[in-house]
Image (cartoon, rainbow, N blue to C red; front, side, top):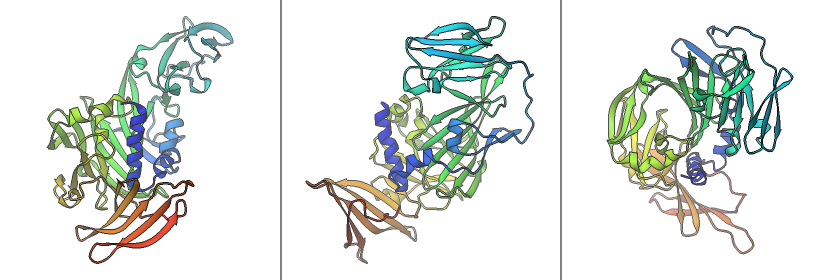
Length: 412
């Protein structure tokens, strides 16, 4: 799937919170209060925010001491870039020229001690995609040469040293947020130690995973935070959390590493195109959202990966710990999104207009409370927004009309 098509998916998910521009803004401007990152059962580190993780990891020290590498006199590494490659200069001496066949961006080059041996290594970005993929070169002090680094090049993506500690972090985008994979060295092999998924629904959500012995992820904690002030609303532990794995026989629902339920279907084939982009996993096709505002995430299982796909809603029952088909939401036969104002909003095109219906829960039943029509532009480039309410019989009643740009927020 091309990135442009995936951006359409991102836009659709951003609608889920009723903030057509807020989704991407949140990714770029996450607030700065601290969140815990589970690094391993015996070690916990702290970071400041989702956005800061992407660019520079936090200055907090780990809560438990981490063994530091032996202090050495590091190589003073500088470099000079031309249109065909990069000249590497160690301790003031030109030691090597790496021919690239293109002029790389200096801002995307990362020179750091990636194996914590006291000497700086270097990551050189590929020509495409602005410095995300690229090649790692390891410094060999005896020869003062930089050699391609097979172990790190299995990942081949820009990584960051965690605040000078012997931990590497790989930052990725997801459909509605960011992801962070934490690694440590085991002799010459890089091993995953933890994973954090930050995404945005009617809350800002942080999911924390550990890795089991077979390399699979186990969800161990979830934090729900307020969109506006980042206040922690609720913390859920592993015994009250479910997560998903798309397999050949269907979608497996897991708790603490164990399969507790399977939603049967040919989802592995249907969702496969979404995983063609290296940022995403096949499980990104599943939408997690708190549709009944009980602080537990429910799910929408789409029939395909198009942004307007129909599908099936499942409610998470905290009493049984299972997902149950949700008859009331499934009556909508449309993609619905939970808003921060505790409404369920359905977005759809009607002719040339774009319409939103807002529902509110009333003793387990969805009750329509508002309807907005965003009209297309006229010959002068002007468009209108018209709002309706609903009477006791469920019929639309005209409320107000506005010029586009002047309409107030609509149950968002």
